[in-house]
Image (cartoon, rainbow, N blue to C red; front, side):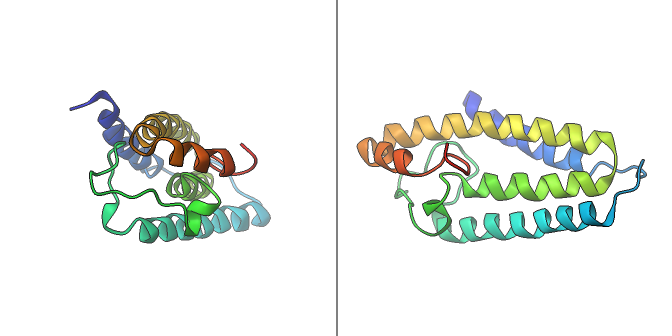
Length: 147
């Protein structure tokens, strides 16, 4: 197994740790709860839309399948990695709603793993699609916002 593919179990482990059982340790103001639920729902919707856009070329690997085409439409017009954006948003909401420190730590681990996955994926996409990917990367934020 390639080193970059070791990130898939790390991602799964971090996601599972966000749901690790335990009692809530603090109360949340209603506005924070609403914001966290908005992150869960909105993030889930973004990730789902990106999964649908990927269609049958979706993979957990950081290397695109041989038959893959560069997707720049739908959610990929606004982010080069909308699945990860949605996943991080939803996981953030869940971690906050858990009201414990452990899910928040797991969220940090997940963010780190996804950062490493993004680096590996972008290298593979650049290698596969060359100038086409470079041009796409220049006009489309990596995750969200201006960067």
